[in-house]
Length: 551
Figure 1 (cartoon, helix red, strand yellow):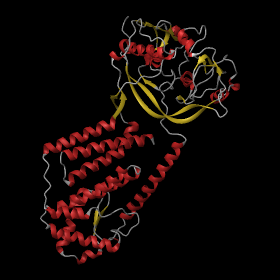
Figure 2 (cartoon, one colour):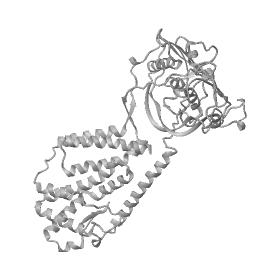
Figure 3 (spheres, one colour):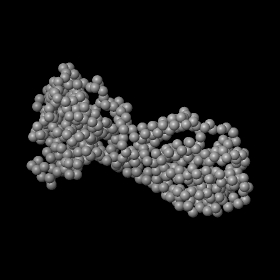
Figure 4 (cartoon, helix red, strand yellow):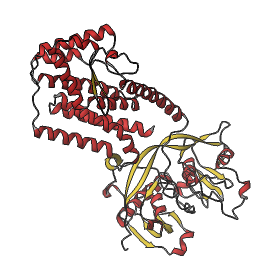
């Protein structure tokens, strides 16, 4: 459903641009307008497939976004099992999304069934079942005249055959069928209904113009159309077949246009070429373009005053860790570059929210960096101080590794952490945020978790944002904080069973695997709950990166 609604928004923008271009270029020829909007119908039906699987071009027009601060880390979770590192959550709605999908499928099924019945019966039409002339058939169109046509004057018969013959030449039944199919797929979008009616009317106008261009008298031709309209009124329908969608479109407008004597100006080739080029460009931009946040310019970053980057020893990767020290110092030892990038953008290390990049970013790097004097704000929370360090780390990655990332927000299935029915069962930390800020917390580590899936959650002074960021390293969906709980807490739990396919709990990590609870039970013990729902999640993709320059 997300893909379908995104496609609906994109086609609305494309249609608006096309309508403006046609108006600005004064395109009024019915045959040209029909060709433009018929092409648009085809694009509209193909767009969901393109949105799902086609290549995208990033359009960095949204402003850069500042996110929450970097959580200092001591323990780095082990890397994902092979094949899971690049996996992103599947954009399928849950809960209420299934009922929405059911409503859509019901509406589409009804219209598709009606279209199928009409298509079958159109192939079985005879002169006896038609009140007025009709042209039917997708691949082999044919003209069916009513039984009453035997009594028509030769001039009327010739005009009618000229009109219906033009429908044959233009393949109008096929395009009208595609418009009906598009209406069934996008039945929730008013544009699909408008297009079906618009194409039908334009097809009639184009055939009228072709008849008059052959020298038929407009007044006499209008009388023939009025006679046919009276026949339809007496019979109540053009075709005596359930499921057929063949309404008379805009007869009064057609007759008025023919009798006015106003000639539609011909379109010059340069004007037509310009119209096609602009419409095609708009379609390409809105079909393949993805609005992303612009990469912040270097001048918007605060940079480290001194920074050292070195390739780590392969033997030290198991002892990886990052730390923010007093005085604006940042250190990373034996840390895979992917983890450093995740920390810079405040992402869980093992989630699918960071994708892309070459294989070598799994190699470890040692980083030592010092912020300029006075660059770290005083009198603010530790998280805001860490945010400055995180921005400096982004600058370092862009400068030394030539890192370019693409951001995109998607509506994805998540676990929302909410307070359970009986309230939270959390223990207040021994220190508060002020103590963490001014350094009086002593040996208590603020906003830091250790442990993980195998060893459990261990945090001496952590908040709910710290909890969701750390836990997401082992969940099969992103985790968001919806508790509204403030303050710092001491959290101690056992390890839990793996949630991701292929993950295992290593030996000698406390409880035996058979005795371990699920992560859902762990949260219940804390008076919290993991609740499946959908939420907007910012995804990051590494567009390009290079090995670092020398110090």
